[in-house]
Image 1: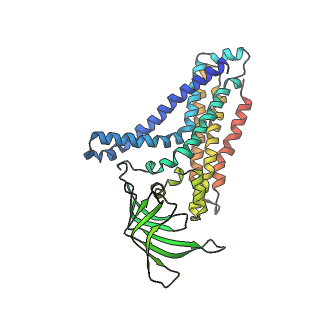
Image 2: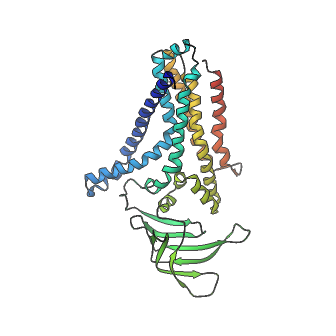
Image 3: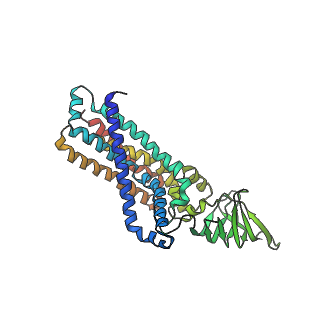
Amino acid sequence: MKVLDKYVARSFLTGYAIAFCVLIGLRILIDLFVNLDEFVENADLGAMRVAWNILAYYGVQSVLYFRDFAGTIIVVAAVFSLGRMIRANELTAVMSSGVSLKRVIAPIVILSLVLTGLLVVDQELVIPPLGAQLVRSHDAVPGEETYNIWFITDANGSLICSQSFDVKTSTLRKPTIITRQKQKDSLIWQVTGRIDAEKAVFNSQTERWDLEEGVFTSTLSEDPASRAKYYVTDLKPADIPIRCESRDKTLLSSRQLAALAAQGAKVRDLQQLYSQKHFRITDPIMSMVMLMVSLPILVCRDPKAMKSAVMISFLLTGACMLTGFACKMFATEALFDKVMPEFWAWLPVFIFLPVAILELDSMKT
């Protein structure tokens, strides 16, 4: 690595660290300012416990904030590093030595690819195991949350309901499980029976739910109800809080999304699953596209033009983000009586990738 590459890389990583702390910190402060009253609802636990709840909540939520701001952080870091070089007239000196500006921005592009890989790792490996903590409300005490369960589907095709699920004890209160089986060569499910119990406690050793006073009533035979001692399912205690929340699918890995799609959910739920699977691919691509759209504008040799260049780059980045946000809203909506999650997921790429290629091609080096 040449001295120039090391200098540009160090400047970019410094800008990345500053942008990360500023954007993530600002996001935390805004959320804390709006929801501080909910944390204070547990003031009877003591000031230290409330402070610890706040730190624990935002410590976990920061992985979500990074996922949402990953592309913007990269663009801000590029603005920081290139802006400092332009202000010191360093780009002019580099060009006068015969080095192309495309060669100058090469370390930024390479490091951005690596940092975009962190976004993929965050989404696929970090967020899914933390899903149960990420859906915790502001006023909930860690480990003492409860959730109402309404018709959660498991891998068996069964529908699980419960008055409440206690996270601390991994207990379902008065659960009702409607067992089903899919008819041969058909998408229609047939109800085969119902399981009722006073409570179901997850047994971590046997990987099943032990039922207290469980009774199974079959709809396929005239036999009286029989005892049910346990229920075997792929649904684990850590999965229930995620599945109970409306934003659960954004916290699942691609493997978990594929498993849910294979269970044959409702049509609208399937469209949400498919849109999430495609956005997992296009989101990292759009992070790089936003950078490639901004870089040719930022590489200006006149320090006086830097302000306008930064403004234009931020406007283009904002346009990319707004387009992506709008596409995520329309991904599960019917357009001309058709739902096209794949189209909406890839639309921002089709719009802004050609713009990035044209700008790079026309860049004065």
